[in-house]
Length: 422
Ligand SMILES: C[S@@+](CC[C@H](N)C(=O)[O-])C[C@H]1O[C@@H](n2cnc3c(N)ncnc32)[C@H](O)[C@@H]1O
Image 1 (tube, protein in one colour):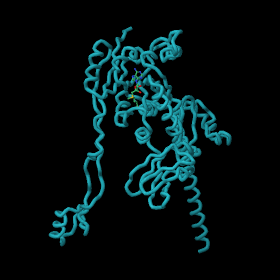
Image 2: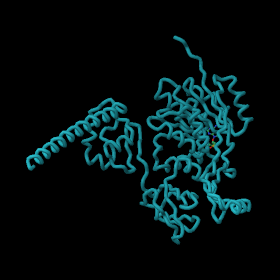
Image 3: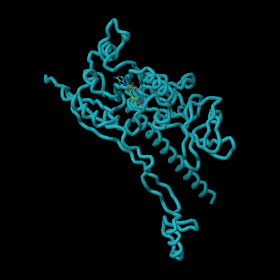
Image 4: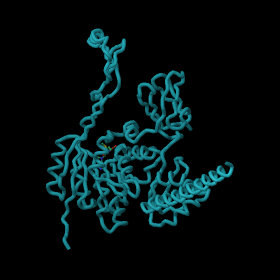
């Protein structure tokens, strides 16, 4: 008996060892495969893997990588190599990556969402002494400083709870103080689609205004892209600079150059007597042989027709200009102008968002009460439960009082310059 059990035990332990060996080998080959895949996507120098594993504690402190020239996906790095998930900066060449913000700091903005009604309050920039009145009491900024996202903050009288979130880009641009009417998120993202913007693109924008579209564009080109944004009013440009600086701790700041002046002046050659010796054109021609540097141009100004001729030489052939025009008469004026230019109108559209209100409710009408009385013996069907208060149902309708309707016509023009056949 004893002999049998020892043999059994031996067999079990041999079998277990074999299984472990198999698992270990399998895991190693799976890891190698996934690492190889990761590196072949993002860089051509696999030896950097070992560099990354041996990163020094000094690098860890600075939260930067020991090889500045690589272009890597932030989440890939964080997940695969278990790098600290704080709000640090990974600077890879001209590419700036920042991890998601997780804790509120001085200078940040915050969305406080009412725990019951979901009503939102925009707060910021946060400062030690700040205070914000909200429904149900007031909240001190200091309650938020150092708090992680999704913390529930109570009003001073402890009556109401609010959940703390970082604002999204669209919440930020519609809530910051305005120098002029901004481009709303529905138009900003449609413009990005019409311009066919991609990471790495260089885009020219005029006018800068509040910097709402500037931020959307900067986010779309992030990587090696860049935005040159022009406004003839320095107060507007300064407001926009502040908004770009403050959004997510200046995440997109390095991707934007702010220019002050009339667009056509900045696109003409700089004269020695000019008060502004550096123009967009002089900068472009000093660094590029080819003048056609922009992958897209967007014009949000009262009369873009005036500026088209000066913009065209800097736009790459077959790429797009989008004009934001509130009135159809402006669209017709633009159509008239482009007759004499190598531009073709491809699309004219309005972006309309219809927000729907979807939530559970009780129908309290007399009709519902009568219905309840006559059918009180019936089993309630799903979604129409009866209660002494009324009938349970769903509100399901467009939010008529908050229609995001007409703001402007978006006109997409394609550059159709002559092509010389070799
Ligand atoms: C409606 S605002 C732009 C709003 C901006 N797109 C935003 O998203 O916040 C129009 C801006 O165009 C500027 N502007 C008008 N004509 C211009 C021109 N010829 N050159 C440069 N800027 C101009 C004005 O000063 C104004 O700030």
